Figure: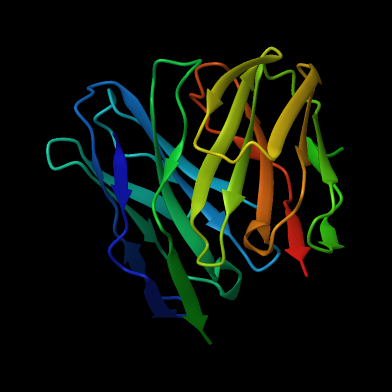
Length: 116
Length: 113
């Protein structure tokens, strides 16, 4: 079974600084998708960024970028110029790209605190 | 215009009661899901439906029964509620290939007293 591991239960960063959240996953598949979701105190699950495994180029969305290392099965999230609104739980997630019967598997999350 | 809406947002009920949570999506997605988030924030899938057909049924007690009247709706009915059922329940939807991830509802916090 696929597993997703986030080894940092909590992280903190100063406002305007950069922070990197770690994620590793276990799979024997070659074709899959990876995601980072943000869950602020409002509880809403918000998609931050996605990566297609067959693309070598790292995904970027404004201040959010990933470092995707397929061979190492690593998918870290970098948040640049951290803002107070970035404070949230961040979940790494994996899904095999077969469709239909597949399910999104989540890591246990990293709680990010942003200090003013 | 809410993409995935679930109601109610909060539900407080006594042990032994039966309750339902409703979910609707207006994204035209074919696949819908129920996830449970426990007190430690861990998200685990319970069920998935593709175009009204049950696809995934994880090891969930029989007291939980999903119902999908059409591909835009997926409701969750829970019988004989227990204290351990207290959690946040999320509905979500996606394209069949889930290439763009899931779109989640805002969650229902269920508290069983």
